[in-house]
Length: 144
Image 1 (cartoon, rainbow, N blue to C red):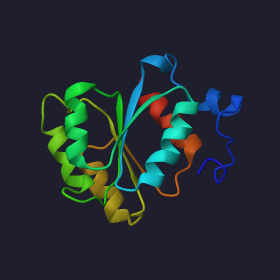
Image 2 (tube, one colour; image 1 turned 135 degrees about the vertical axis):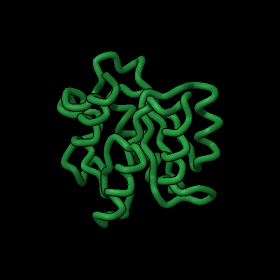
Image 3 (cartoon, rainbow, N blue to C red; image 1 turned 120 degrees about the vertical axis):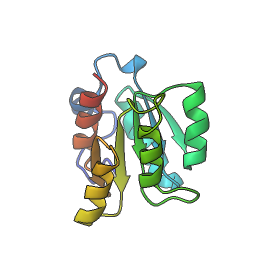
Image 4 (cartoon, rainbow, N blue to C red; image 1 turned 90 degrees about the vertical axis):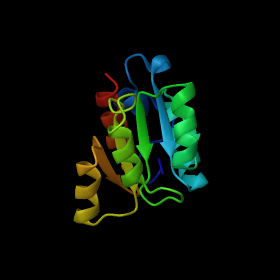
């Protein structure tokens, strides 16, 4: 993923453009049923100073939220058990979780999907393959 965006993982440019000011204190959870996507994003985010947790499903995310609250959630749309739109709506309806920014990461690129994601309460919507530089900048904005 990082190579496709032209950003070498771990480079000074990568860090300058995407790390939060207090990276050690910032945590993101990647919720995607595709392990390769989770692993690639984790590598990119960790090389920029983020603490990263992975959840292969919405159910796993809910258990993680009880243990260690993240600063931002990256959420896929197409997952088993509950899709990302439904999960985002449920989180935004819950007083304990509604303030956590949700950023969709999805292969679904139709304008109606993006509109649905944003109407669920998401802070942003990225279409795969993800522009990692833009994603890192957006995560930094959302975590400050």
